[in-house]
Image (tube, rainbow, N blue to C red; front, side, top):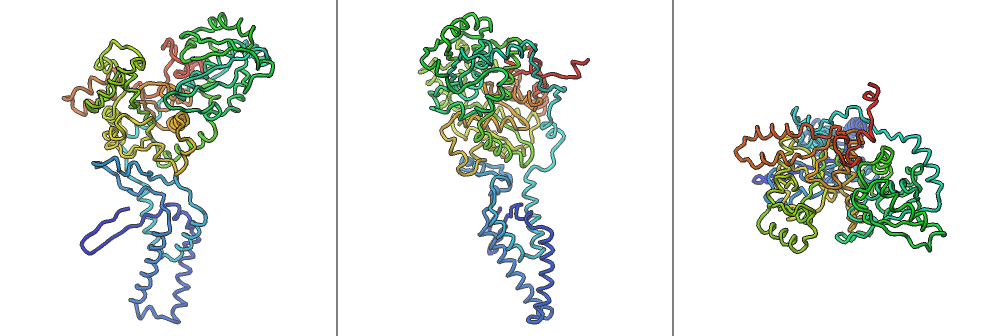
Length: 574
C-alpha cells in the first residue's frame, strides 16, 4: 500500500486480499450485470440518465466511493503493509522487515466478515472489480519476477541416486525381540541433558543401550538446563504414545517402574566416550540382572558410532521415525512452514551467532573491538566453556574452518551459489550477539527474511514462551521442510537435519566448505565473477548428495544414513 502527496492532489490505493476476490463467484458477477440492467430499467421512471449524463456519472461515483470506504474501514487486511521490496534499510531495527510478513495464509477470516464483504461488493461496478483483481494479482506476484537459469538451479533438488529408507532387520534380531519384550525384571533409567538436539541424540543412544541389555526403557528424564531453565518433560516435546508404538517390536518403553521395583535402589553409571556393545554388557549386564534397575547419566557421545548393522538401523528408526514432536509443537511448526511455502520455495538458515557459541568455539564475532572484548572476558572467566583446541589462536581457528560464518560471509556464499535476491529466508537460531543489527548485511541483500516470531499469529507462541527446547523444535520442523537448508556452523541441529533430509530423499543441504573457501573471502582483489565461480566449484559436491558412511569412519549413522539405513534396489540388483 502506498500513500503520498503531490501539491493539492492526494492519491490513495487500497489493497484487497485475494480471499475477497475469490469469494466473488461467477454467479455473483452475473448478478452484478443483471442488477445493473434491472436498475437501469426501473430508474427510467424517475431519472432520465440519457438526458442527464452528469447525474449518471455522479451517482456511479458516489456508489464506488461508498464501496471503497466500506472496504477500507471494515477489512482486517492480513497482507504485509509494504508490498514493495525494501532495498534501503538505514534504520532496519524498526523496519517493516520485522513486522508480520506478506503471507496470504497467515490470517483466517471469519465467515461473518466474508458475508459482509460479499454483500458490499454487490454494489461495486464491474470496472472497479477488474481494477481490484489486477491489484491483488500484482501483489501476489511480489518481487520474484523471472529467475535466471542459475537461480532456478539453486532450488534444484540433488540427485538422490534412488536411495530410499531401508530398515530390514535380520532374522536373528527379530528372533531375540520376543525375549526382550517379554522381560519384566530389568529396567533402564536415563537422564539426558543439554538442548533439544542433544537430548534427541542421547534418547537415541538410550534406546539402543536398552536393547543391548535386554531391558525395558523408562521414559527418559530430561534434566533442567542450567542456561535456559527449561523444565519441559519428554511428553512436552515428543509424542510419547507414537514413540512407544513405533518401538513396540524393538524395546518396551514404560512410563513408570512397576510396584515390584519401586523400592529398588538403582545402580548408577556414566559410561566413557564411544563404548561398544560388548563393553556395555561387560560392565552393566550383571549389575542390572542383580539389582533390576540401572540409571545412566551423561550419555552424550558415550555410545560408539560404529555398531552392528541391526543396531545402526535401530538408531535410524528412533531418530527418523519414533522421535516425532508432540502434537501442539508439530501443528505450529507445520503452520509456519506452510506460511513460508505459500509463496514458493524457501531457504532455511541455522545461524550460530549467539554469545555462548563465540565463547565455546574460541572464535571472535568481528563486529567491533567492544564485542570481541566481551567474548574474551567471558572466556577468561569461564575457561571450561571452551570446547577444545585451546592451543590455537583465533586466526588459526578461523582458517581451520572451526568458526561460525558471520552475516557477511553467509551473504557472499549464498550469492555465489546463485540464491535469488527474491529468496524468502527462514532464520532459525537464537538471538545473535549484538542483536538483529548484525544481520543487516544479510537482510540488505535478501530482504524477505523471517523468523518464527515474524510468522506466528498473535498468541501462537505464548504456550512455548521460555521453553527453549520447544522453540528449537519449531525451528527444526520449519528447517526440515525447507527447500534448501544451510547451517552457518556445525552442531547437533545441523547434523540432525542433515540426516533427516537425507532420509527424506536427499533434499538440498548446503554444507559450507569453510576451510577451503575462507582464503578467497580474505582476497579483496579477486573479481566477484571469479570469486563466485570458485565458490560454486568448491560446493558442487556439498549440496546434499548421497554420502556413504563407510568412507567416514566413526561418523554417526543418523547424519549419514547410507548405506545402513537406506538402500538402492537398482544398485543391489546389479
